[in-house]
Amino acid sequence: MTIHDSHPFEPPPEDRDPVRRFRGRFATGVTLWTSGHGVERAGLTVTSLMVAGGEPARVLALLDPESDLLESLQGTGTGVVHVLAWRHRQLAEMFAGSSPAPGGQFQQARFEDTAWGPALVDAPARCGVHLEAEREVGWSVEVTCTVEEVVLGAEDEPLVHHRGRWRQVPTGRSGA
Image (cartoon, rainbow, N blue to C red):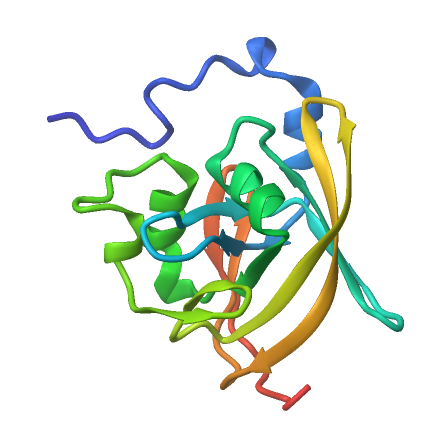
């Protein structure tokens, strides 16, 4: 076994997509989106999103057009957006499809059923959303969802994605 200081299958910098490299310079919070009920559940790790305040508030995200999550969100019209903590980094890998999930993704943590879909029990924060609109943007589908419920747990060290790696950002625990 060889230990690498970089990803062994990553192409050299000159062969990488410059737009992806630009996007990778942003440190972004990591979320887990889930939708569906029973055996018809789907989930996806998402970092390309924003939250817009207002009445109602909205969450906008870029989703993979071929993902099971997008299909479930379109079919049910509802989903759950979870903020992930540092301790969820392996779960984020599994829902991103870059790490195996023995027995299935939803067997890797505790989820409870809600009106919007499966909710990760120990997520630091989550919101139940309703799909309002969608449109193709580049190689993604932009979804706009209205926020119908917000659940805030104890503030935790957030999971952040920066330059292709998970990062740990200690919180000041200011109570915001």
